[in-house]
Length: 93
Image (tube, rainbow, N blue to C red; front, side, top):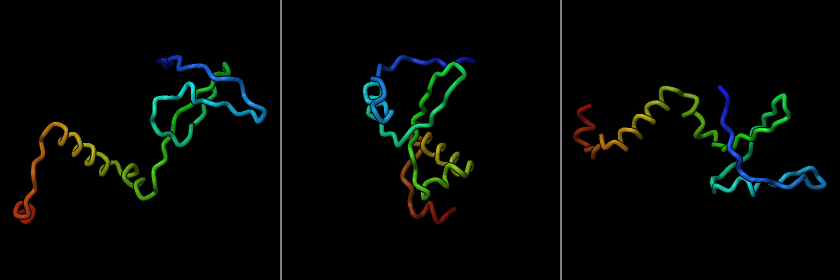
């Protein structure tokens, strides 16, 4: 299946140090720490935005069971399936 690419803007030519400024094409306001760079046989370049997370938080993404539980908890919250938790209810478990 072919990827759908959308024109995001035009950037100028590389400067004397061979750098390209992406700001005109990348202005959605989201924080990005860097990019993964992909090249294809046609010479096209694809940049994939990357956001770094701390080692302290990375464990969650390395533990599929824990990640699933967190995602289910978020979904339950969004869909209104959570309520206040009392000490009495906690002790009965």
